[in-house]
Image 1 (cartoon, rainbow, N blue to C red):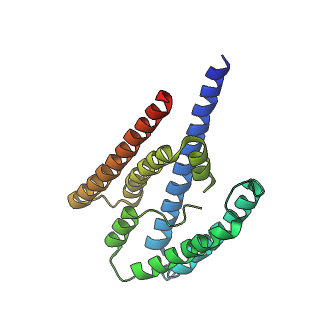
Image 2 (cartoon, rainbow, N blue to C red):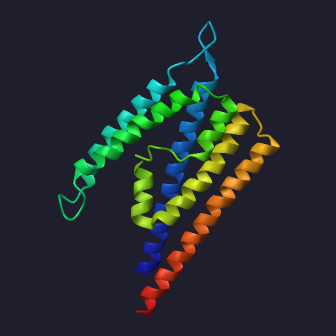
Image 3 (spheres, one colour):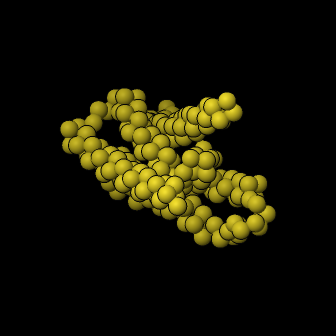
Length: 199
């Protein structure tokens, strides 16, 4: 009976992680799309400082991650020292802001496609950390991949900008490739688990 209740707790924890990842990223996407496409104020001007807004968001994520590492670290029991994360943290803080600045020179549909094709540079989320630490990277990849598809559908529905046939074709191609990668990782994981059981 104890293993059954542990299994139920594990399912609830996974559902909590999925809900957290989906809610956070979809909400962020809706806010980002609103800020970047809508016009504000009496003059109906677009918000022109997206690079700074993104940089500020990433700096907050960097600081938050520093505190989470300090809180969750084992106190030096075989983990990487906190300063070893700084190069990746700083790169992930500055890179997206520069990317947004570069996106100013292409059309909005191309921006939307480029956001779709790339993974978020700052991944810096507790739900993702929790999912990877408790369920592994395969589960996290599956959750975040399906979240991307839901984000595209939500964005299309909320903004009233339906995707063209070419865009849907691109969506299908990308998700087919990602699904195939997930399948290959799953097969590899199955083989590794089989080897462990046999030894």
